[in-house]
Amino acid sequence: MTHAALLATLAAGLATGAGVAWLGLRRRARRGGARGDDLFRTLFEAAPECVKLQSREGIVERMNPAGLALLEAGRPGRIVGRSVYGVIAPGHHAAYRALTEAVFRGEPGTMEFELLTFRGRRRWLETHAAPLRAAPGGPVTGLLAFTRDITERKWMTRRLEEQRNHLRTIIESEPECVKLHDRQGVILTINPAGRALLDAASAEQVVGRTVYDFLVPEYHEAYRALTRRVFAGERATLAFEVIGLGGRRRWLETHGTPLRDGEGKISALLAITRDIDERKRTEAKLRQQQAELARVCRLSTLSELASGLAHELSQPLCAVSSYAESAAALAGADDELRHLLERVVAQSGRAAAIVGRLRDFVRKHTPRPAAIHPGIIADNVLHFTAAELRHHGVALHSSITPGLPPVRADRVQIEQVLVNLITNAIQALARAPAGGRRITLEAVLEDQSTVAFQVSDNGCGIGPEHRARLFTPFFTTRSGGLGLGLSISRTIVEDHGGRIACTVAGGETRFRFTLPVAGA
Ligand code: ADP
Image (cartoon, rainbow, N blue to C red; front, top):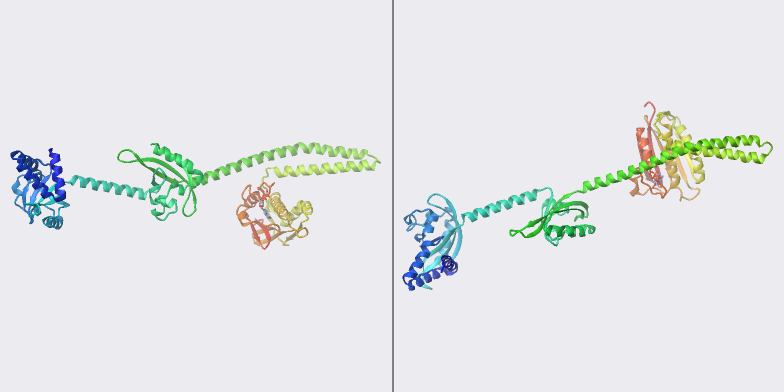
């Protein structure tokens, strides 16, 4: 029998009714003669842990060298024959007394306690105590204890607990989402920041569910691939969208790292996840702005093209017109021919006017504000739009408050705004019953320093979902629309120091903009 085996027998015996096993060993040792005694003595003397025998009152009757060393007693006399309570830390006396009482009732037991060595050092011990009987079934005559030093284990446990607490505090207060999930995506733990990203009030709402319960389905496959890579030992990153418990959709970015157990096996995926919603939104906005810029660039190319074309066409049209005029003069008595040539003159004049308007429209106009009477602006606009109004069967009623002061404005630009508003109104009236299509153009004094222009129609109106975007470049609901009219109008009005807004009420759509009174 090896030392270790003997000690194991002793320990097992102590844990189960040990006194009997101890006596058994002694008896066997005695029966075995000197060799058995040697064996027993060797066992007692050489046991690496403390073996002691004590009375009900706590008087130590025997203690082996390992025990004496544990107590730093130096010689047996300092503890043998004395009370064990002399070394047990006072806080543990009651529990030790209870254990002793139990053992003397025949019940073995185990406890952890602190003691003070003879050199004043504190140590944590773990003791297995068992009743010692003179004969099996006989009265308990002593307490046999097998005690080991667990100071280091205690210290390690405390350190471990401390480290675990530190880690927990760090994870709990980490502003980014930290979570662990298994190979199937089942969430094992998640910190408060992570719960907030999923709109969860408590961990219970998330732990035990899978990440796929929150991921938008189109990212499931990519997330599975990330999980496979991490469980194969790699680190991986993925951006995806989730829908939180509150139904909010969010962009997140996860950095996945393998989490290994004590044996180095990957036990979970550690995911550090951040909210990239704002970034994604900004990126999308940037892309939209770039697209808009590209369209504006294309439009300015178009403008260049149009102005080039206008320039090239105006000369030949002029020539056609003057040749036709000369030919008409030569037509003499041929009235029919002269009439036809006059129509050529009129039509080429019209073509030249269209080309001229086109050139005016696309010309990069430098605003030239001047004092101008609102009535003049209104008259010009009525003149420009008369044909269009007639063509669409729309009645325009103009109401300009008499005696309005002049406004400070670039006439051409403000006329462009009003023509645009009236054209929009005409289009909005396309489906209104013929005879009932009305537009009102008004100019009123808003206050001493401001004049307001209004264009109202009783057309199709504007749905609430569209109202916020009316002035956004390229917003249009018309198949052939460019969606630039209102955005250009707003820029022009604001450049003049005014405001433009739209209201829809009582079957009437009204666009209203303000201009400063000249000299105000
Ligand atoms: P476009 O006329 O090319 O569509 P606009 O910027 O002038 O561009 O107008 C943008 C959108 O605003 C139109 O497509 C239309 O949906 C809406 N809108 C503008 N004016 C009116 C109006 N008077 N009544 C109804 N909808 C209007």
